[in-house]
Image 1: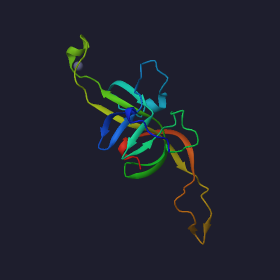
Image 2 (image 1 turned 60 degrees about the horizontal axis):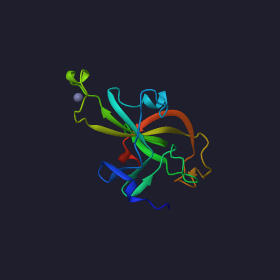
Image 3 (image 1 turned 45 degrees about the horizontal axis):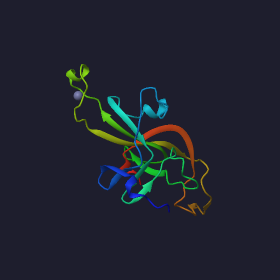
Image 4 (image 1 turned 60 degrees about the vertical axis):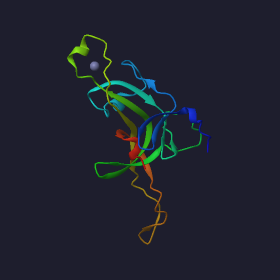
Length: 162
Ligand SMILES: [Zn+2]
């Protein structure tokens, strides 16, 4: 386990959930997020930032975009989407500020306090058709599910990752 520098723990996302490390602003011509990844985010968005690590209940969750991960795979998660359980790998986390709706702010610099929302961009992993060997119809190793990448993205609230 890497020691976590407490100075790298940043703003709170929700109960027992924090941003870890720097927030990088996503400008309109940025390549930090792909078109597929952007399409999973809310339409009416203002400023955006990405971050690469997240602390949930004392557990550090990385993302695939965090390059310093060597032989760790703690960006593979199980998450819930519309009552269904899915497997996925976290590619990056995004902070999205709501777009200001005040007409006046179209003409002057907006300094309104706008609510922010946080998302984990997760690539959905499909269950592989070929699962682990079964013995008399029962899977021998039940906690391991073989998965394959799908190139489809979904978002999850960071605190809904399992
Ligand atoms: Zn405003």
